[in-house]
Length: 308
Ligand code: DIR
Ligand code: MN
Ligand code: MN
Ligand code: MN
Image (cartoon, rainbow, N blue to C red):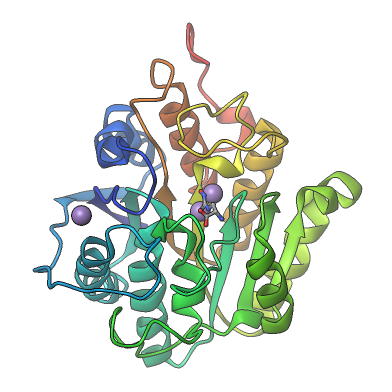
């Protein structure tokens, strides 16, 4: 495949600083080299710049950095739409607020090709708040609500060319859901596999059922991987750790199955905070997961001395 890396150093969507170093962290952890070793071509387009900001006031006083997140969304929606026609875009975050841009841009691209757009959301959180329902005011908690066309974003975020069908979204790893999100997720028909479902059934069958749906619909699949999907014990480099996350093998199995399916066409890597990481171990784990998604198998995995 032709992999296109794009850094998106957005950090205003989270409550703490450091996600702006995420793209550098992924590069330092050897992402491009790992992809090349697997036989892929890699083009690093550097880091995106946000669109110009305009002043925006919202009645919900909790909201933080609305003009900044909107400016990044405008730029990234356009960039994603373009990159979607050029190869396999891998977006190096930056906080999860950037998914407002990737989901809308890749969905618009899919709509033009006439294929249905599906999303695999790997996260401790569903990020399904609207501008009205967010309590923390951290806008990385809102991208899925925006991209699915939930009301209240009009006049703030850019209009959606192709809202994502919530029934085409599968969330895995969920374990921190706010009350307003819970009711809205059920009403919208999003598939939510929380950690208990993983404990009971295993990630394999849960993911297989979703991949079957995507394949039967001849769909396009975007994968959005939040570092906090992983258990904090193996992935400490994130500002919003939640205990009881996915294990090393659960995460790799998902990536290996995605590779075998051949369905994934774009990828977000988000919420890496190198300031909180332990000697790059979270960045290295994320790079290894991308390698599994792009074809590395257990039997070929290089041994790494002195890390993790
Ligand atoms: C919480 C946490 N639901 C909020 N969200 C996220 O702030 O709205 N943490 N995305 O990573
Ligand atoms: Mn600000
Ligand atoms: Mn998230
Ligand atoms: Mn999260």
